[in-house]
Amino acid sequence: MDLSLIRTFIDVTTYGSFSEASERLHVSQSTVSSRIKTLEDSLGASLFQRGKRGAELTAAGRHFHRHALQLVETWEHARQDVVLPERYSERLRIGSEAGLWLRLLDSWVPWMRSKAPDVALRLDSGTPETLMSRMAEGLFDLVVMYTPDSRPGLNLIRLGEEDLVLVGDPGSLERSGSGQGRVSRNLPKGYIYVDWGRDFAVAHRAHFPEFADPGLVISIGLLAYRMVLETKGSGYLPFSLVGGDLKSGRLKRVETAPILKLPIYALARNSQDSPAATLAITGFRRILEEKFARDD
Image 1 (cartoon, rainbow, N blue to C red):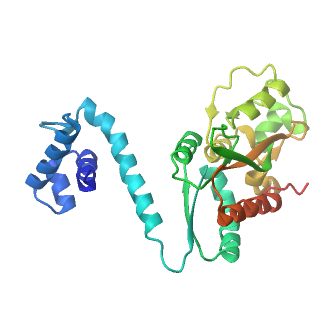
Image 2 (image 1 turned 90 degrees about the horizontal axis):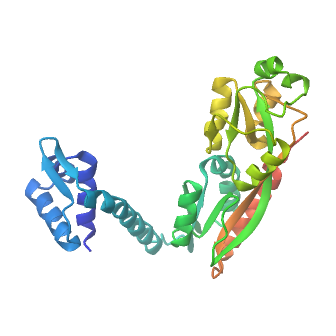
Image 3 (image 1 turned 180 degrees about the vertical axis):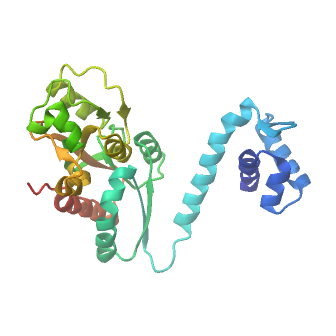
């Protein structure tokens, strides 16, 4: 299939009209119409319905849009893999969860660059579901994430673990009684449940069996961190993320609350035999040991 047809479809969808898409693509409106007609004939379905408000996706168009984005992304990844600059011998494609990436990259990238300057790197982030899906599709060589699902053909490699500590606004903890080192079985007022995965859920339930209705659940660690700060609430957050706030007094740790462990894994394909991937895993382990260790 001609990729220009798919790109034209995406542009019409994005800008909502054939005329706007033609201006963006620097082609005539008749060319845009012809490309869409060719694509519709190939698919055997009408993708747009023209009206006063412009071009609106049909039901078939909405279904195809997701596939169109994936086709373009797959092509870009393939093109980059084939067209590797001469100074590089290999390309390593790695994905991770955004919050974890932000705390790993500043140390891991320089380490990897010093150890393997001839390896080109492509680093992406995504949700756990997206990362697992793209790994299964072969779009990543490695994925670094918390508690992934095991799947056939993928090798699960434990890299280390993070300490999750219960922290909150100092004033709010004092008023709730948690500032004196006491934790009610229902946890401090304003507590935000951060969804760190099934292992965390099991441990949390074991330590706080009476905690039933969280009121607020956030599955993105960085967003939960910001919410704890902005709402003067509390929650379980990685020590590597809040260590500076604990030292400055911006946040306070509830000392009697249990420290919960959050494992970090790398996913690699069983068939993969890449010295660069092996080196990357070594680097991740070293950075985790150095950067995520508690100093108390």
